[in-house]
Amino acid sequence: MLCKMLKTTFTATVMLLGFSTMAQSTQMLKNSSFALSGGKVCSWFMSPKSMPIESVKEGLPDGVSSALCITIAKEKKYDGQLLQRVYLRKGKYKKLTLSGWMKSAKSRAAYIQVKLYVDKKELKRLTLGYSSQDWDKFNYDINLPSSVNKMEVIFRWRHYAKYLDSKILIADMKLVPPAVKEETAASENGGAK
Image: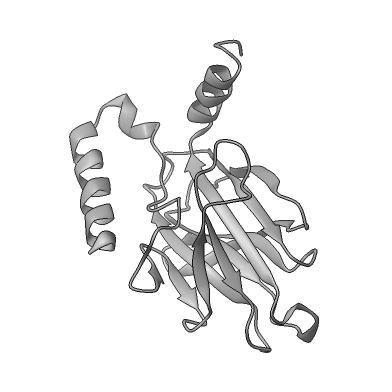
């Protein structure tokens, strides 16, 4: 039910913004707060699907109200992932900024990855940063070739034996055009750029 409400709210917001310039400056990820419904993360694809997950409300960075906590419960050959696809109009954006917070009980247990596509063909894979044992704010500018029409934003974790039963956390992930990044920084600094 919550997933359906989030999807409806996101769709209604986009429809209200129409083709105005505000539509270009909005958050491009759905459910960036990683809300859960029925034991699943709404609007995100998770693999493996049976990982223990929970929403965390305490011990978070200032300004962050909740985080998704995943417990690495199984040793596997391939890294786990929480993924969302974002469809783009070719050439509309030259750059996007991906930001958020991550943390893990053991350093380098999790990382951020972005895949860029032209139609169904993967053009580029970017590994952008690894987790540490403290909350780290990540902020990456992603240059987009004009032919890109799809990207995948992925929070990944390692299933190695040394990470078993450890927790990884992700919070407040945003994907925005650079103009929004400048506006956000200005508002956080009292209007100064």
